[in-house]
Length: 267
Image (cartoon, rainbow, N blue to C red; front, side, top):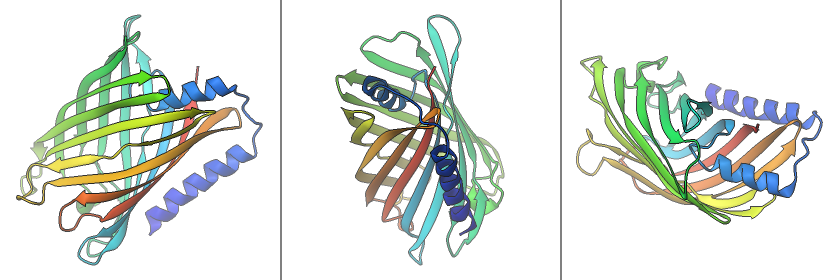
């Protein structure tokens, strides 16, 4: 509950600050290009998304889990030919009964080396690190983990589509805890109408290879809508989506609502 309040307060605070500020002026084409850059995980756009996830039907008591992912994306120009994209993910978790804990989860860092001037196929590859930063043992793995990730996508007119994939393995940490061997697949497809409005889907598919048979996969299906609203001197993207899990572990969520506010910092 406390983490839900924190996440909602952050979102409302940002909205209030932006609403009280001067309007950021942007042409229709500017908003469309910003929307497409935001949909590209390895673009040269600095952004700070606050992704609120409301997961329903979690645990033996079918409670709601709240997860706030703070996911800044910071591109770095290594050379004239290559960019390095920094993508940390900082989770705040409100875990329902019987765990009934809230706090910081395991922080993950994703880095992608990507061409600064890509052709039709845009891509990036790099390492993934996960740190045992959870403030409670029930909110994290208590393991140090590392792996690799890759992303590939295309932009065809109003369409942006591709996928991000990674897998991590534990290499150190609490020996009494289960080993980490987890895969994430995030396909995405978006259609941009113009003026910063887009619809699409971006399900987060996960596999826990250490789980028993029938408990490994979480596979959601759903859709989302997003809009860039030119408020203040910073353009802001608002996103709302809903996803139903067609495959999940026994105590996993039945369905989820995703609400995200992303601050964009174009050059």
